[in-house]
Every structure is written in C-alpha cells, then in structure tokens.
Amino acid sequence: MLKDLVIWKKLKDLHAYVVTVLAHYPKSERFTLGDRTQNSVLKMAELTVRANIARDKRELIHELEVELEVFRFLTDTALDLKILSMHQHEQIAERTVELGRLIGGWKRRFAPDDESSL
Image (cartoon, rainbow, N blue to C red; front, side, top):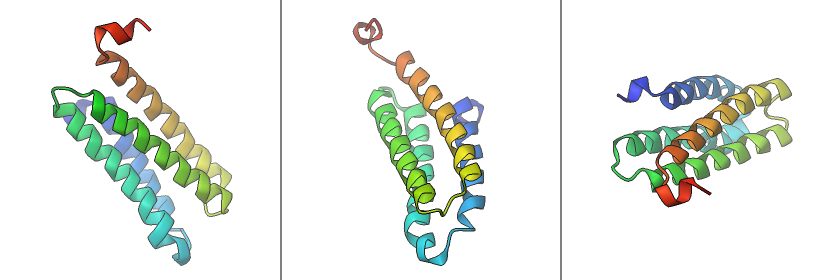
C-alpha cells in the first residue's frame, strides 16, 4: 500500500514542512516561486503514486528524479534570493537528500538485469 512506502511518508513530511515555510514567502514570490515549489512537491507525490501502481516503473522513477532536481533548484533559488533562511534550506536539503537515496534505491530495484550490473 502507498501509505506504507517510506518514500511516501518522507514526501508527506517534506510537503508539510514546505507548506509552513511557503506561508512566510513575500507576497511578490508567493504566487510564482512559492507556487512552483509547492507544485513540485505535489508532482513528486503524483509520480510516486503512479510509479507505485505502474507495471514498468522505470520511466516514472526517472521523472521523479528529474522533479526532485527541479525542486532543489527552486529551493536553492529561494536561498539565493534570501527568501529561505539557511536553517530552512538545510532542513529541506536533509529531506531531499533522503528522498534522493530512496528514489535511487527504487531505481536500482526496478532496473533491468543488464543495467543493474553496471
């Protein structure tokens, strides 16, 4: 079940944290950078749901990896613009590193036999 997946639990935790942080974004960025950031987490959740039920998970897992990088770009940009504090960015970075590891494990698990030996 989806709710039993560690990656799902970690995404829910990331989303909850991001929502609290986004509430403090300045109005000028709330509906641009803020929305894109939240939509990125929601896209990762959607891709996780799709990958969990798909027969061939590889393409969806790849898209999940790409979306994680988009999310990292958005949060790095918020740090550069001083919208996120260093502490907030570190909290998000810890969560994204953990998600990256989980996605990598998921990717290796469903890699074709000829690719897993690389």
